Image (cartoon, rainbow over all chains, first blue to last red; front, top):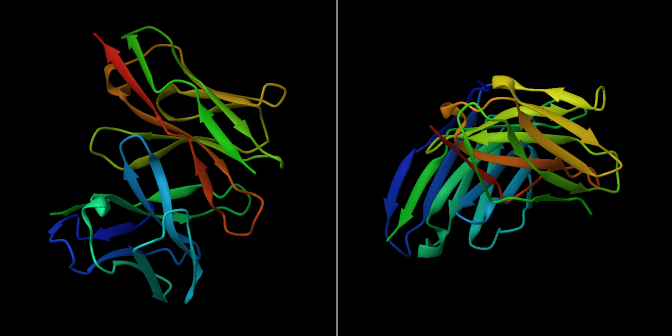
Length: 113
Length: 115
């Protein structure tokens, strides 16, 4: 258990509304990541953070923004949700000094209607 | 650039028979390699990792993977499948070209175990 929680765990929202997902870690890790998982696509990186206020884009960042004002919290915002953003969202942290394995939160299932 | 290819999208075995899930990688650097497992409607769990200390890596639940540099492969094996092994398995390589600790994911192999 890497001490990662995600909230909410499930959410249904309407097209055009903003949505914020929260990732919280208890172990003070520097690197955090947001992924989405869709059938046939595996895991795709949305955004990541390498420290407080330090973030960068992943491969599917359009329509998403992130913020990290504290080490323990990494927020993902869908600025105006679309049906194509219906997905399962996972947060992860990176640990280790050389091998960089990642540990994951339980996921958030988001449905945009 | 690093990449990873899982050669089978679906594998079906009978309970008690061996499991082989194939993974090839491409890396300009000495890679770090991982296998993750995801049971239905569950999160992702690290199964094992290649640390360069040994080419044969043992993981949880009886799984092993062998790093073969000459073949650029990191296949996952288990001598005897159990019903509880039915899951999605992901082969992953670390992106060591930058300082971001990103992982590059294969598309996954769905393992079915038949009674």
